[in-house]
Image 1 (cartoon, rainbow, N blue to C red):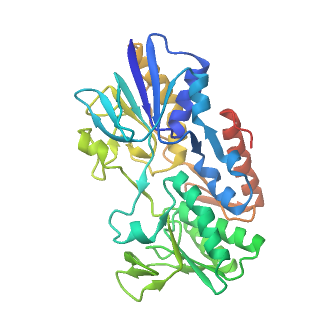
Image 2 (tube, rainbow, N blue to C red):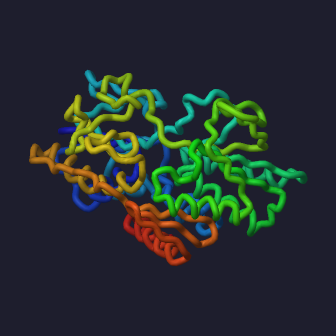
Image 3 (cartoon, helix red, strand yellow):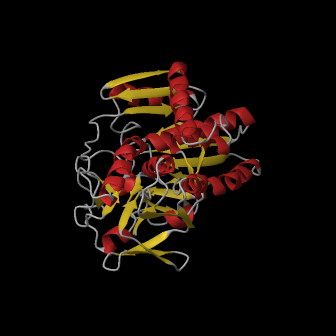
Length: 371
């Protein structure tokens, strides 16, 4: 009997689990290896911080999906692969053997080149660690009578949404002594978005009383200070890091073909270009047609990954997938308002937030979680 191992509980694997729950894979034993029993839907995380959703509304129960599909569930993280022996080395000391492996573990925080970040910054990923640390940060803010300076390092969609969410929470709960600064390397936030959206985001930050510090590249962190390549350091009481995606070290060290940043190179069928019995999707993958690291593409890869894993195990023809050249991005701005971009087009308003809220809730309902 073949053994299929799903490594990680990312957005693409959620669709694979759902597919296997609807239709078993005859002649194949399936196992899920993931460090967490649930997956937090990243699109709704800012809404949880802002107070729009309870955390349960943002969570997909991976153990429940695995049980519905009669899949073995291993609550542990991967430390490495032995491709010769076809096994996954796990943090709990176990080795999980595979004939076919699918990887959707998500990215690491891109802080490897920022000295002091491990000691003095609170990264947004892994999301479960952030969720555990968030109440402690709130306690620190509430326990300080004088001004509390919160720096958000990173001005992509994740950092901008985080800033607006925290500001909304502060406004509702009366954290009048909190001052938020958003720091980015570009002159305007939301690099890659249309110019109108970037300018609008900068205006909204100012209107909500947040400082935008653009054109500053971080060099290192020390206790209470963010140092830049040029200029004076920025003092802080806490620093949240939303600096983009980095690859874990183990794909490259295991011998899988990776790109220059360490992400797993896959072909149009989502198979590793070096090991055809290994598949990858989501942010950990470097697609044949390069795309930004975004949950949009992980979700879109899910149905093709589910089909191809089944087809590979049954020795049938695999589907080719080319990610769409552009994607719809919906960026919440805290107070039930959002920005939308599609290519060079952009929109904003409360109706955009309602649109985003509808899409997010619909996604959660598909996988058995009612928001």
